[in-house]
Length: 253
Image (cartoon, rainbow, N blue to C red; front, top):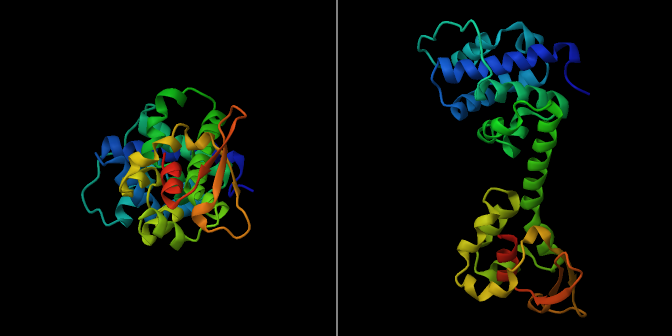
């Protein structure tokens, strides 16, 4: 259930749009820097919880001023703007207010999966589209990132590896394996840690996102004797010997 009723939604969207536009285009702040302040000063949490004073009591400009003061910004702030056009920044705040209300996610959770800098980049394609189109796109992006973050853990377990096994087989440090699985390091860059990626070229003819992987093993075979059976959208099957390098490199495509 949303933290506040739909009757407050227009105010909430308008105010978050105005807040963002004022901070960037009137105060000259970097969008990401200001958004970080919005998240860390506690105002994002209050907004998401539907605190009336924050959602609709303040104007967007007043909310920006509150965020900046709470963050210790002592500089004199520009006069409030009388009118706001639908700038990229205004739209980003406006649509994020809607998405937070609709999804019931915390703003910090949204930022982790869809940073505000990526929202701004969606402006040309979506600023004239209905709000539900943004919801669909945002959900898809966040879901894809979550799947990518968990892919190494999932396929490692399918192949019967512990994190230590995979580290020893691949030459990638145990700490890096842990960070890839926790999403603290980008798995797309995993191949950079492999000493001889060219030796794996037969395994990377297909994008990993299109592989349907299953694991077969005989009795209690050692990890390096496991095989992955891949179906690459054609119905054809091929058996691929699995080593730690293969797993890290394939997932890192």
